[in-house]
Length: 294
Image (tube, rainbow, N blue to C red; front, top):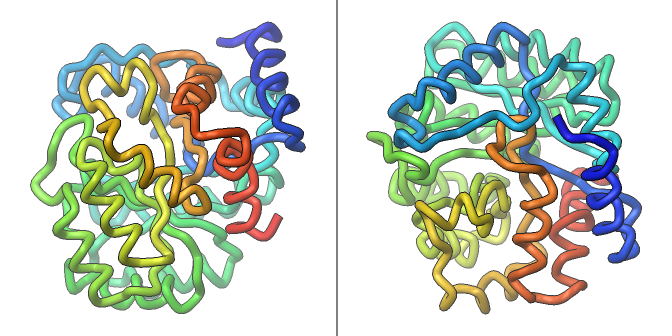
């Protein structure tokens, strides 16, 4: 776990930019026994992480993790939770209602899965105040363009509630990862406010194409540009001008607490892109604040 030294460096980063703090759209909070199973999977070097060593930097009890992210000065964060089988999403969403009620600085997060009844529990989550949804195509091993999800995507497009979706093929490809399945979703629901997790790694340029085509598509920075991410999915330097041009639709994401390096490194990686302080201010705070009406 990080101490006050790292927290001081993180705070100096956003204070130098004149920001009131950070908005991180990709952090994981979920029922403790579920999170422990996620950590066990990372420890086992399971196939979905491509056999890459992945030590969990912020492995601690929930209250300690909340204390750390608040000490970093993260004003708003998310509880990215996701099912891997039918029947799990509704239960996770019930936990998320309770977590949001006791954690006001966490944006109320919900999830979904292609199954009978998904439209109903997505509507229930919206009625309960969900501010953001998480979809994990790789872990869930499903086609996001499945007809079972069509009505749910329509509800979210109508409500303009963002969906952070892991649909790129990193760190290991799945049967339904990559740009083509999500392009079919957007063709049907062009107003769906998707946030492509991890910048769509490793298919960065394909997902930049989608963001340029659909004005409600955004991308989060989670693990992208870091030394760790660059080892297995380097971002093409030729795409940096496109990244600059989309500066109003790139959002800070970190994967806290499940990252194999200190939180500060994500911020330093963004700074090393040398796209300017205005770009950093937008990515690290202003874009997320605008998206969620902070």
